[in-house]
Length: 309
Image: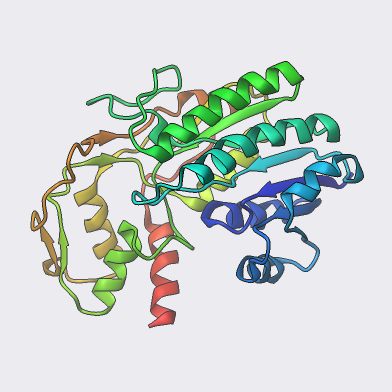
């Protein structure tokens, strides 16, 4: 039978990729976007005219019983990823309050499962070790603090309401559709323009995961024998230094490594030198084959930016 799926934040970086893979299955997608967001509407309908666009969360949650019971709800809607974002009202309304409203909606709608998207930044800096789901969280930014509050509150509320829920925490997501100011696109764009790239020494350890693998692994998890109300790291278990990642970008795109000036800018204040996760809990459920290189994601960005140039 066709599955009914709701995706909040459906036109975002990860959301649009989730939708594209979900469309490959026998599904009816309901995509929640901001009211009046014509760019997101166009982006989604370019994937498929069968997508049901929903622009009013207020109306949707008040009419929960008018919608088909959702087999899955992927909750990606969020605000405040930018470091300079400090709108406390929006942090509370979108990152915290909306999540609890979604639990109420799922209870009224008799939805089967909420897949809540947390953030790896909830963990904070734990030094030179891989981050595991049972660690205490030490969030520092307003964004990370709000996401951690949301995860804790949604999980407790979903248990009370008897709504099945799991939380995923993606690490180092990169690839097609990534914002131009992020590491991989900025390196590639500068090289295409023949501009020198100023960067830190690149000793930071990170786990860069192709957005395609993030989406596929989370969909697989939602269909596996997960443990309700648990948290799952979404990472490749392949941590690399930022320097090696930049070198891989340069080599994959056949750029000149001399265009990169390592060590020409300082590290950010209080920057975590090791920030990567342990994915053994995820792999116990799905045994997903994450690639051991970043070539596909790099080429996806390169081909998009080369066309734009």
